[in-house]
Image (cartoon, rainbow, N blue to C red; front, side, top):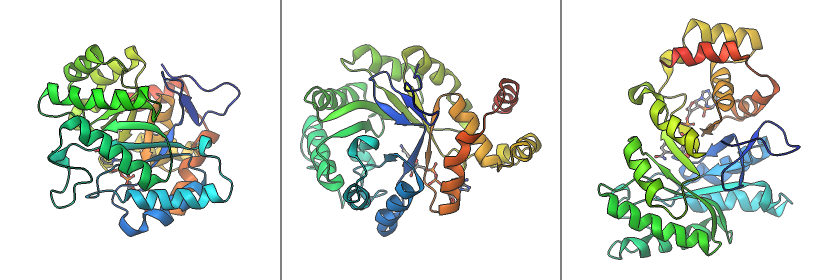
Length: 288
Ligand SMILES: NC(=O)c1ccc[n+]([C@@H]2O[C@H](COP(=O)([O-])OP(=O)(O)OC[C@H]3O[C@@H](n4cnc5c(N)ncnc54)[C@H](OP(=O)(O)O)[C@@H]3O)[C@@H](O)[C@H]2O)c1
């Protein structure tokens, strides 16, 4: 499983591929023309991980590149930022705005999407490339994965991941077939999937880091629970901050797409406190 980097603070973790990743990653979906300024705000607040996608329907990837460029221009080092984007299969794209040749085979689509991401993000290398979702057929998933592996082997990307994969058997298949195993899984974290308990157990066995989204938006009831409020009072934090802290203590990387400077500041400050083992057990019990 991931370990804290040597001599570094608790806000980061090292993947099985040896890539240092922040435990809180700034998410850039749905920000449209505000993307550049919000990425800039997030980096200034202290986020050192950014998640995006080459999927114009939901992400303005060139805006991410614009926001990053401002901070890189001011001296922020590229190596201090974990930058992750996604290849989105055709069914997930707006047919009117596909960022690659929709008629090309899957391998070429992956390469074209990757090239577009490098241009959009104004970088020559990615830290993470995530398959946005498995295809309906495993053979298509594998075709996309093979192209992603080639990009990794050629040095264009440091690690690979897969998102929206809720069946353990499908992840097992990918791990069995892969030359380069997924380093991250990015999923919706909510009650409907039993919080991916089984899938996360498999990820732990294989040293795959789990990234959560919908962490707040799909967990209203949990956040309103009296025990979460009490823990918030104990540590003088909101239940949202307590929940993020709990998850980071389980080695879950949280995607946070806040547009609020105050929420960004509060979320990044969760590493100033630590829940006890007994308290983590109590929060775990609320997820059962
Ligand atoms: N792989 C996929 O298919 C997929 C799907 C969805 C999302 N994602 C990724 O995950 C990222 C996060 O998306 P999300 O759906 O989890 O929701 P989100 O964009 O992070 O939204 C969280 C909501 O919670 C509110 N909030 C309240 N208190 C907060 C606090 N302390 N910190 C942060 N937010 C707080 C935010 O409001 P304020 O703005 O006022 O803070 C915001 O409205 C996306 O940007 C994207 O990168 C991936």
